[in-house]
Image 1 (cartoon, rainbow, N blue to C red):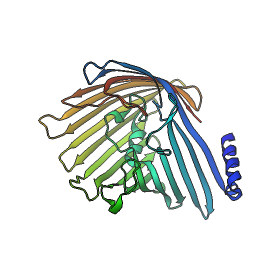
Image 2: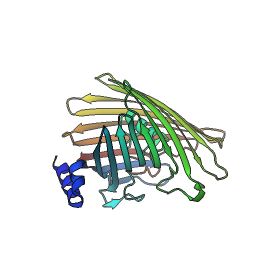
Image 3: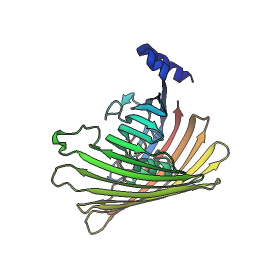
Image 4: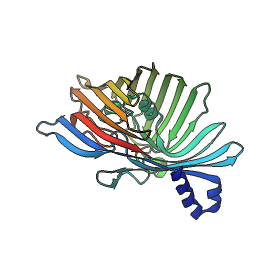
Length: 343
């Protein structure tokens, strides 16, 4: 409540009408810990021990707000900046590069314009026991488009538990703006229906990507199906995806995972991941990752975590144990231990 009042007071200094009509919230995540990585893909590279930030969740400072426009219509926005606590630096891909969008919502659903998470990433994060964080994250192997820039998205209202997201990006390549004549723009369109009913969640994703007016311009088609079921004593989850590019490269990815409560404040997680990539060589590139972890809540906003992961690369695969903010640097074994605070 204090944060909302402070934000509203600041808004009031700028515009009195905005103070009366808008609701602005300041929020964020501060995540710090120690990481250890070993077994580098490159022979002779020693292990690495470091104080890292953003391992379970990327550190962020965010502002979000809504304005009631009447007749059930609301305007909203999200501005979210990422940063690193260990060195005090901002992300190098833009001031508001985590998310930045404006939206209108009502009985028809929500329409948003800007930079936002892709439907595929949202599906993957919802089924991964590690929530796409720590060295145990499924996306160490599972190829995905995390965010879409220059995007327009529509999220339907719930139809008895079914929501559908449709998104289109005119230039999803990082934070770049659309080029003259749109030449080279990486255009993406996606659709993702997700059904949620009590302990059951099932979701689909399909999207395709293609650079505009360049040669060669192979099209990549991606589809994923995933879901979870919470039995109370344990929550089981799985996802499978295929990524097919016109140039002949094709990848298959899957994960199975489980999480289970331990007492009133603890949770254990485990997962097994696989990636198989056909690059036209005699043997497909293969990789496997298994991971285990534990999370302990100290309060509703603060928790401790620990996770360990091991990757086995074969036939030229080069996957490594990254986390929510830090690349794996070629290491095939990783350990994350830290604390996360949300505000």
